[in-house]
Length: 180
Length: 104
Image (cartoon, rainbow over all chains, first blue to last red; front, side, top):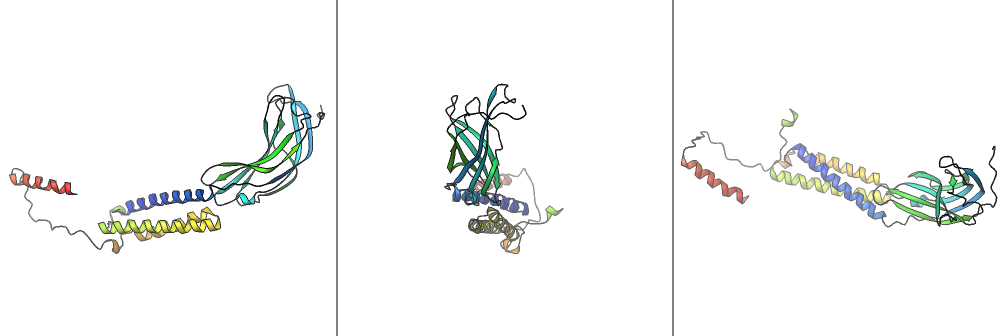
């Protein structure tokens, strides 16, 4: 502490320790937050095709196609320790091959300050709804749910499944692939 | 060179400077945390803390006169220094100075 530089060094290191403590208390103030919200999901159009996924193999597989509506107000999830939300729509179903299939169909990053009150109509999926066999045609019980990660400034990366789901069934007939 | 400018404080001044800087930084940190919690903006916490660091730097980094009030009173240097190693007196002096270090 006897020269200018040692005092500056001591001040900066102490400040960093204080900042770490403040960040930790910021995490503590939000650590018990449940980050729950309700999502209303509906399907507009549901088709199933039987086409080869050339990126994997040449055999034909079931490819689901759907358009969906989604309403969810995620604004209450944001607090001073929430930097952004990663929201994703998951389809869950049982097929003869697998007890549980989970396919992510759509996702969105909502940053702090952006409008998190989602109200979407006739949305297309971001990702293909491939089954690894023929488990989609006539499947009576496919459930769509909305989940999200809350990315914090400090602390745990929480993953939350929203309450509210939508169950639909795929048609019994394949839709012919266009321009074949 | 710039670093050769005398920036030292006396011992009590150093203690006071460290205590002051800790108090200022912690107080601004707590105030910033409360402001950030109320406004739900952690960036405001960091900015208030930064203001506290600036103030602490201005108050405690330069060797203000308040940190140099109690300088150590050194003995005046002797004018004639005799360095005769062969004298037995010198050994007595060396052995006498050893217990002093232990006391510190």
